[in-house]
Image: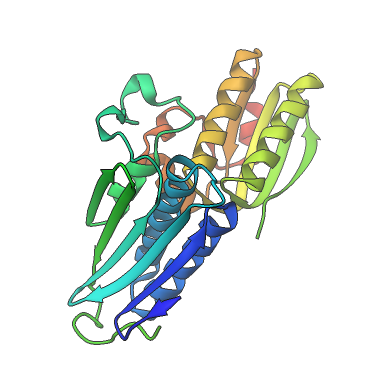
Length: 150
Length: 114
């Protein structure tokens, strides 16, 4: 784990445990930053979905590939970055999960949920991996003030 | 907290009382195995009581859809009972609330089967 006053980052294995761990870290940090209860749930779920994509679809559980998870408080935003070392996600081929023909599909809702819960979702695929950036604006009384304590 | 399930019979309907989290991994597998086991034994009227399920991720949502379609494809019906606000919100966001038959009263849920 590397850490500065406003930024904390973790290097994690490509495992199911990483997904739970990423969610727990997101919950803790969002709580420390003073987000409301429903926002904490949204942030933790978005991070969980991002971690699922990185572990399953990015690194495909490869033991030699790592996930990097970083939380950064910048002004009035919480910026979360998740990087994998996979082949890069094909963004042109993501079906709309709300389309009637897709409603009964058993997968394909992760990115949709992230976009529903976060203010900004950026996905940057490359041949050496995918970088996912999730941003949540701080609306509560701590905006512009308190820093992440860890 | 991982997922736990218990099953009971009420007037020919199987109530599955689930608690914990339905997420990628163990939670989803437990739900899948439970529904498949019920169907294989001829229990095709299923109510999934989610009163104590406090968290579902996209994999868990997919597992609910799978349970619903698997049951339907075998001539049965699967209904949802007692959604928490979080789960209810998720089903609204994903438009699945329009797909599932969602009940908030167990007796009414049991009676609703033909």
